[in-house]
Structures are given as structure tokens and as C-alpha cells.
Image (cartoon, rainbow, N blue to C red; front, side, top):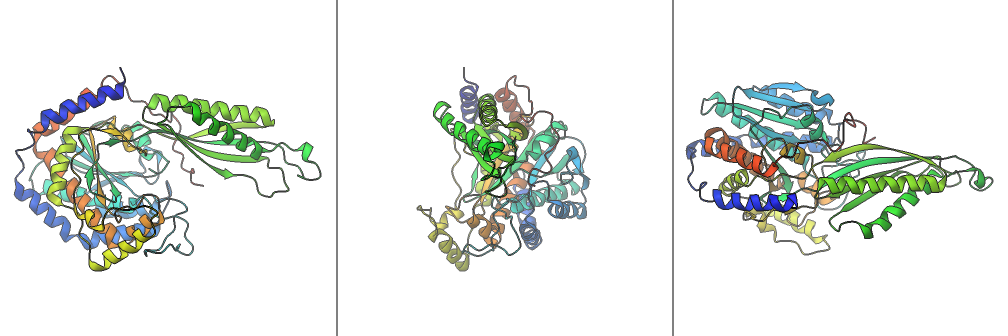
Length: 484
């Protein structure tokens, strides 16, 4: 039987079983109310940090200043920080407390190339800058740090005991940073992990990710004068274009859920020189990791065929590989209760005007701006998503929950200049605080409600089954220069 189908059955049973068990709140509501108030009191600090990282706009594995800022903030608040973990200079693990349970909070901070944008509602790049935070990871990392600091404070005040960890996770955008951290054993003793993602709405995630394998294919030919001696050349660009053509023809003969994308990262330098080197960067995605791998193998065959047909040679480098997301309904439903308690985002008159200008550029009808103040109801039927994330690999090692918060004007797509613009304003930082508070409240539940943690672990074991985790990117070292 299809393992994904079985997973949905298990999750449906779990949702029905735990729906009533979470009605009674076992945590002192005063503790949660005080945590919300305390996080709000630090808003100016967290806003300053987030906007500083927005300004840094450092891409994957190059996030030296962004990582350092988070590490220093955690150190200033009493955490012990181990930096450069998993052979990644910008990765870190910040810890406070001792013993069980061990609760991890994930923090990201990488930007995207080619998305430079000022914090205004008209498209305008920042002079001298190429990258931009089109996925809101400057907010992501800051909210996670804020949640971790609040839990540290509560442990210090002896409200409960255990260990809180904030994981500094670089290069989520194609670099698979968390995969190397998982592979290095950094999550082996963690009882549960909490994470979030910027979005245009507030919700608890019950949508999985697509498994993803990415690689750079490099073709080598012979250069020659393209007009005087074309017969002496063997074009590496011809090979790339031949490969792309074959892969595009292949789309008719692969499962419809598959997603394949590519960009030609090097196509030669001058039209009158036959290119002796060319490179193309591919992503292959599918809800099932085994099918993602088999389809990727067919892409490799297309590359080999293109090289043969153009009398060039080819090699390829696996850049990243990530799993789908293993849902945990028990933990998700607990998080939903906390998100409902925290509430959504309310905008000022000026922010609403900013948002209307953003929405005016959409080619589709967006939700009303006021929907940012609402919380989406819990989704009882998990399904496959359209994106990929290395959070999926964490979810196969430890029970994991993810939520989203409205950091962009409703209707704003991720990886867009509009998302960068919103993220550079209080539209973004207000949503960030929704995430920080919700994650902190969920962590409080895990520290204080042993039944919740036990049920979360039991579901994790049942849904994972007998699958033994193995990284899709193999045993390669971190691709620290993949953005070069």
C-alpha cells in the first residue's frame, strides 16, 4: 500500500483521537500570559535585529554577519553557543538548561540572490546589492531566537526544567543546511522541534513538502572561432540546451506531481567563441522521495545523452537533497490552540495604504488585507505541498511542528520583490512576533505537559514506521560555495 496513503490514515485517526484530549489546558495560563507580555516588551530589540539582517541580505552559507548577530543575542541572554557545527561556518547550536525534555527551535537567516529591493511598495532595487530576503528568513531566525530566549527565562525562573536549544540553520534555500546538521547527529537527543515560516496568512502547517534533489551539470567541450573554424569546436552550450530539451520532452512521461526547474548558470562568454564550458542547475521534486530519486536518475541520463550527441563530456555535483515533511497532528493541534490564543496581525492606516499599493501590482485577486488579523482553521486533511524544505529531514528524526505567520500583505507570493519590501517594514516584524509568541507557548506546553509529549512521540513513531532515515544528498560535504 502507498506509504503516503497510510500516513494520511494514521494522521486522520490521530486527529480524531486527540481532538478532545487537548481541550483541557494543563499549563498555568498565567505563565503563558506573562510570556506573551515579556516577548512583546522586547519588540524593539527584535525588530532592530530582524531589519539589520534584512539589510545584510546574505545568501546561503555566506551569512556570517547574520549568524553572528543571532549568536551574540543568545549569548547575551545566557545561552551557551557552539558555532561552526556540522562543518558549516555559519551553523550553530545555542543551549540553555539541562536534562529532559530537550526542545529544539529552528532558526533560518539566508537571503535569495537576485531579489534586491527597497522597503517600499514600488519595485526598486537597493543600489549595490543583489540579494534580498524574499522568503523572510531574517524574520524567521529572529522570531526563533526570541522564543528561545523566553523559554530560557522561564527555565531560569524554575517554572519548569529541561533543555532549550536554538538551532542556527543556514542555507535553507537550496543548500540543505539542516540535512548536514541532522547527519552530524545534532538532533539525536531532541524530544520535539518547533519551527515556523513567514507567509501571507496565519496557520499551522498540515501541508507536506516535496522531496527535492538538486544538482549542477557541467559540460566540457572545445572552444574555437565560431565563424572561422566552427567545425573545430564542440559546444558545451549545445550540450546544455540538448539536455534541457530532452528533460522538457520527458515532462510528458513523468508523474504529474513532479516539478522540475532549471537555470543556465553559465552559457559561455561571447557569441563568436564556441563555449568550452557550460553549466545548468536543476531541481527535481516529488511528494515521494523514492520517485524524486528515480526521476533525477532519468535527468542524469538526459545529461549523458546530450554529452554523447554533442561530443562533449559531462559531470555533475549533487548540491542538495531534502525529504518531504512528516506531519505530527498531535503537536500541530496543540500549536493551533496557541496560535488562536495569540491572534493575527493588525495594521496601521499607513500599513494598509502600503499594502494596497502592493496588491495593486498583482495580476490576480488577493484576499482582503484585513485577513492578516485572522487565524486559518486547522486543516484536518494533510496533503503534499508545492515547495521543499530541509525541515523535512528534521521531521524524520524528531517530532516536528511548523506554523506560518502573516509577514507579507495577503496575496504576496514568497520569493518576490513584494515579499522583500514587506519584510523590510513593520508589516513583517509584527507577523514575526506572532510566530515568536506561538512557538514559545508551544514549547511551554511541551515542557509542562508530559502527556502531550508522550502522545507526540507515539504518533511520530507510528507515522514514520520502519523507515530508516538516509540523506538524499549522500555523504557529500556541505556545498559551501553553491551560491558562487
